[in-house]
Length: 461
Image (cartoon, rainbow, N blue to C red):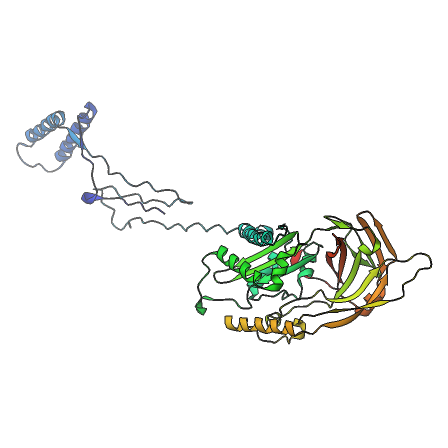
């Protein structure tokens, strides 16, 4: 708001008077005023002898003065013109100089006008948030991939990474597991995709505050650069960044004055489902078309596995703070094509081994969350040590012979009865992994989670 100040009386700056000769009309008005005075004085008590002569002399003097002496006309002092700011402020009307205010009438004052409310900052959709910073992180990752003679990746449009980064910052944790109990491939599937995928995260299980005495973030680009350096110094995260089979990356970024949460969710681009895999009436149907170098020349070029996770539920910050890695669930079955004629399979199962990750569901829900930056580092180190101490586990995986197994060029269609699996494991998350061959190497080309008998959160829709 621009203030308007009016100067009154002798203190106001005045312009120089400009001499002007009065018009005939002005002279007549002056004579009329003098006659009016005479008439008024005639009605008053007589002042004494010689009054009439005196009046006539005054009138003649007035006429001569008006004809010979210029009347100074004051030019009013200029005042500031206020600049409009939204709703204009009403300006005071100055009281004319020399005109007395009536007794008892207060001098008018400004009525303050409320300042217009600031327009709310628009909230961008998740896929448009921090676009410039995400492109910068992509450039840094691709620089590392090019140095390693690996094809660059492009930005994907799956929202799971951004949503997980925002949840991590809001709830002051950093984990592959979400406090909604979901793992990366579950979030990725709920957000609408089904390619092979894997995740990197960077952050801490504690939110730095001003009272902690740490320096505030000065440059978000510098923070992103340091996050990339940290991830590249970690063998597992480095492998993920440089994996030659990745074709896209979905970047999630969220930060405040002191904290940054980073999520990198890599994915392939090797399969188009039509329709999406489906579990219905005790059966599983999977069909699609492979692309980008995947070949299906023989039945054994296609592999389909089923993994199982119990129904997810909410986790506490104390539980997720004690995690370091994640697995794809429990491998509960592999599909194989049916045989024709008198051929039959001699084995109904096979043995495999894997190293599990510590499960936050095994941690008491009342486990304390880190209460400082140092405690967060100690928690991370303990989770890392626990993951490295996990011993390799052997499991027996049943084979399920498919009822239908058709391959036609780059397309396939598989159906299988899995009623026994569903009865044995019940409600939960059934994740379908599809393998294909690329350049003579078996590669996971799809990972898609089906929530069976479980209502997933709607966060990722």
